Structure formats: structure tokens, C-alpha cells
Amino acid sequence: MEHTQQTISLDGESLTIEQVAAIARHHAPVALTPEAVRRVEASRQMVEKMVEEQKVVYGITTGFGKFSDVVIPPDEVSRLQENLIMSHACGMGEPYPAEVVRAMMALRINALAKGYSGIRMETLQQLIEMCNRGVHPVIPEQGSLGASGDLAPLAHMVLVMIGKGEAEYQGKRMAGKDALAAAGLSPIQLKAKEGLALINGTQAMTALLCLALYDARILLESAEVIAAMTVEALRGIPKAYDPQLHQVRPHPGQQESARRLLQHLKGSDRTTDQGQLRVQDPYSLRCIPQVHGATRDTLEYVWAAVTRECNSVTDNPVLFAETGDVISGGNFHGQPMALAADFLAIAVAELANISERRTERLVNPQLSGLPGFLTPNGGLHSGFMITQYVAASIVSENKVLCHPASVDSIPSSANQEDHVSMGTTAARKLRTVVGNVRKVLAIEYLAAAQAIDFTDGKLGEGTQKAYDILRREIPRLEADREMHSDMAKAEELLAKGLLCW
Image 1 (cartoon, rainbow, N blue to C red):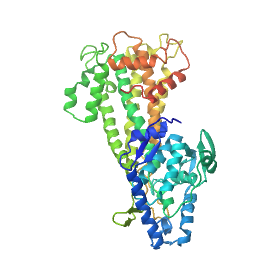
Image 2: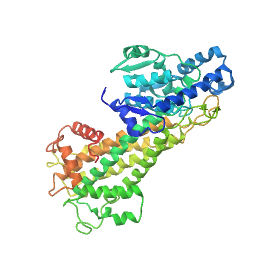
Image 3: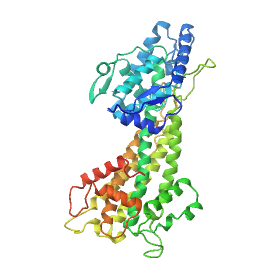
Image 4: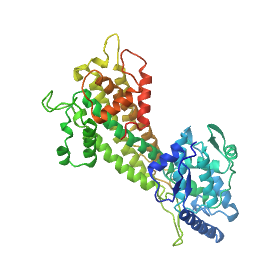
């Protein structure tokens, strides 16, 4: 764990996706602002008063879901919250990676910091300390309907806070109470409203979206310079990226992608003019700005939606300390994130779709004018033949994964919760799609560099830089070797964001 990271102050209002990634992946510590502490304490006072006056308020003095009409005696209120956590912690499947768990914790802390949930400061501090000391609850991936939020995943997170469940600490999986003890912490006892305040929210799907978005932005910028390398390898026509053309169809993403392509190709003498070799390039070269640009616009839309969600109140009921109102509503419903995740999955998958078509052009001698499968001794050697197979296989897999999860809904809680978002399923699929796109782009990256090695001439400013980054790690393919390791190295370069500038 890194201890030199600057502390990120959470106020419920200004958390960014970049900060979520820093907390999740680089263990940046978190703390509440003084104003957030004041708001949390004010909302807690409301809960204490309602319990004292024995008011009938959902989730505070009543049961949950279909049991919302069952009033709970005051001496059972604390037990109600613990029972809620234990009964709802019924996820299945493989556990989420630690970075996803950390993102969930950070997002839940930030939502509670807004001061509309009625949690005690000491309970919220427990979650903050777990995050800062690296106590990571074991949270199964499956089990959330995405309304009433991510109940099952978040319940597994809270189990560890009360000394139950399992956690990972310093690379070892152990009982939750043992992980707390190893980190110098003790279990807490939940009081009125606190269990509900901790699990009613969209933090699992939003955590997945934050990390997928962060990676998708890196892949978009990487795809642009890799595509420019392919343009050079195939003696493409950059006139198709002329600003005049994109001003008359002024989609911002399209214009930006065209601008970046020209920037990456600046100074290159490997490209051609219209009519020099051919009048027009195929779509996979000519339409890069239109295809990549549409993905760019989608990413910007989803980025804004997820940023709003990171700083939203998504539990129920919501306590308004200034007016004294307690409002039961549906802010936990994951539909905004479900649609965003499905939309982004489709948009990011298109980066791989067009990339695989460019790879096919690079390896196909009938289309490229280069040696078949980019090997100097075809027949004895197969070169890049099967890398295109792999890209095609992964692109096909993404087409299955891009079927929207958000169009489905299965009623739950005895039909009380009769429309759900399936947003967490959508976000889980999105994360897989993003990982697959990285693999396909890595293959094009390798193929484009290999194709460049068969021709002469000066590369562009951006393409030369990208070529050099690859060749420092992976030599030219002179004879067949185990391509798997080359592909894994290229994928790692993309994951590190080395092609973003």
C-alpha cells in the first residue's frame, strides 16, 4: 500500500472519477471535510429523535420491502439493522477484485457524507478506517438487481464492519473480525437506520462504471494513435481527416478524433494524397473519426452521468435535516447507470470492431500489398495469421456481451419492487467488454508496428512515439515465436496508459 498519496477530502459534492480510480488502485487515503461531518451529525439527530418519539418511519422503526408495514419495537431496532445485513449478504460467484471493492467503499462514504442518510459518525468512520487501512471485504459479484440499489454486494461490505463475513488484508483472505483486528480495528454495533443507510445505494454498479470509464478513456486515446500507425502502414489518405470535412458535420467527438489523427500523423511521409495510390481508403481507415468520434461523444455523456451519480444520495428513506422531512422514494433505482453502462459497452465495443477490420487489412496480402500475415518467410512461418483469429473471436464475444441488461426486469420482494434496473449486470458486462477491447487493440498495435517494419519512410510525431514504446519491449517478428507473450506485453502497455498524451 502506498502511504505517500495525498488525502482525498470527501464532501459528497465533488468526487471525481479520477479520484475514485486513485483510491481504488493507488490506495489514496480519504477523509471527510468538516462541513460533511456537520451534515452527518445533523441527520443523525433526526434519527435519534424519531426513535425516541416512536414514529413509524420506513427502515427505522419498520421492516423492509414487503415488511414495511411491520412496526419494530424500540428495543429491537438495533437487532433489526444487524439482521438486515446478515439476511441480505447472500451474493454468489467469484469475489470482486480489491480495486472494485475499494471504489465501492469510497463511493458509499461519499454518499453518506452528503448528510441525508442518518448514519452515526463513528459508524461512517469505521468504513473510512477500513478503506485507509486496506481491509477489503470479500464481496461476491452476483446477486444485485440494481434496485433497491446494490443490496447484496453492499451487505457483504457491511458484514466486515460488524465483525462478520470475510475480508482480504495484506493479500490474505480471512474472517472479517480477524481482518479488523489485524488492522487495529474493532467491530461496531449498528444502531437505528444504519444498516439500511449503508446498503441502500448504487455503489457497486457505479464503482464498476467508474473504473471501466477510466480505462475506456485510455483505450480511446490509444486506439487513435494505433489507428494512425495502421494508416501509415497501409499508405492511407489523411485528407479524410481534414477539418473542413468535419466542420460541416460538427459532432464534437468526430472533430476531436480527426484532429488527433492529424496530430499523430504530423510530419509523416508514409501517407498518400487522394489519387496517388487510390482515390479513397476503405471505411476502416477513412471513417475512423466518425466511428471513434461517436464513441468519444458517448464516453463524455456517460462520464457526466456517472460523475453525478458519484455525488448523489441513492438511499431510502432520505432525511432532510433543514426541513425535518423524511421522504421515502426511489433514488436507489439504478436505471440511470444501467442505461449508461449498456450504452458505453456498445460504444467501446465499436473501437474493437473497427480495429479488428484494420488488423485484417494489415495481415491480408490481397488488401495490404505487404507480405502475407506480416512474416518475411510465409509458409514455413505463419506470422500474424492467428492473431487476427483471436481478435475476431474476442470481437464476437463482445457482440454477445453488448446485449443490453437494462431492458430486463424481474419483480422481487413479493411484487413490492416490481421494476428493477439490472444495472449491476450491465456494469459487470461493461467491465469485461473494456478488457476485451484492450486485447483487440493490442493485437492491432503489434500488427501495425510489424507492417511498418516492412516499409521505409518517416513516421508521424505521435506514431513514432507509439512505435518506439512498443519496440522497447517487443522486437520485430523475424520468425515464428510464442505470440501470446507479445500480445500480453502489448496489452500491458495499453493498460498503463502509455499511449495517452
